[in-house]
Image 1 (cartoon, helix red, strand yellow):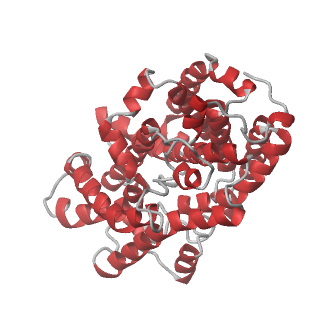
Image 2: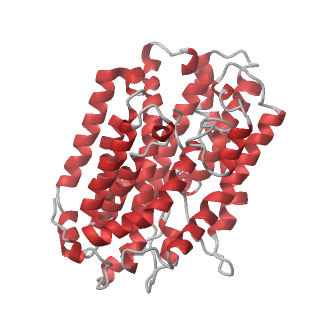
Length: 422
């Protein structure tokens, strides 16, 4: 869609006023980084990115509400019209791909204004990410362990039977953020994606180095090839469990950021291409066709094949919605409800799994409800309950770390939020 030369892949040092405001936007991961980049104008909030994050988070919640009601581990699946919800076992995982792309997009927006380097250096970048991602994570880890030790620690034949099988390896791996390699699924079956993103943070400076030398297109392509080579080459091993191909999806998000926000002529030209809209349609059709042809059971075993078109879908969506506020997709994703949920979607991710078990074990099952009725309850009143609790968790354990010391302004927003059951 455009040509790029390494010679012009450095920072945007001659940014036009209109584009400068775009580059300094506050959304998702870019908030903390934007506050440490040089800025002279107000930073608008890209609401549609929060909306996209919320939509993906709700898909993950639907995935787990379904698995709590119709346990796929026990080969329980609904029939009739409800069987369509079995595809949530696929879409819930694919939502993680969307979150990874969003992360690459948001973290790349501010570094373009600092010579394609993390503002303040690598150590400062990692320190900011640790401040943002770790306090709420460890709070949720403690909450999950407390609930397992007291009220939801016995086998019940539900999805939660996996997290309660805790040993020393599981605890240590979660403390040092290695649960994507060891103890995966224990304590809280969605924590693995936090470790995945944490590891990508350490590779982000290398991706930026490659971008400065070879350009973002070559960097994204190489990251995709290398990531998928590791995923398929080490299939069935602990390394493959960490989804190394997500590095390529993260790089796709970086590419989307450069196209959507850079003032360089090559990117500005690519930004106006109709190819991005075509990419949305084509990648969506490819994903839907593959899921239909394979069925949800086979598709849920072939996630890496589906992650790529979904990654393209997410990247193209970010370009299209960022370049035009009047686009239908932008307006839909900028709806107040979605944007509000997007502000605390990380908390939704961190706490929704044990909350589902609590409602299932102590409210819905004692009422003698059928699986279908349980699913209906979890996706209506249960959703409201989880959102309410998550918002309170956000106020206690996220919001204090979104504020810069001595300023009281939001410093950073969500890392990759919910992860899906694997």
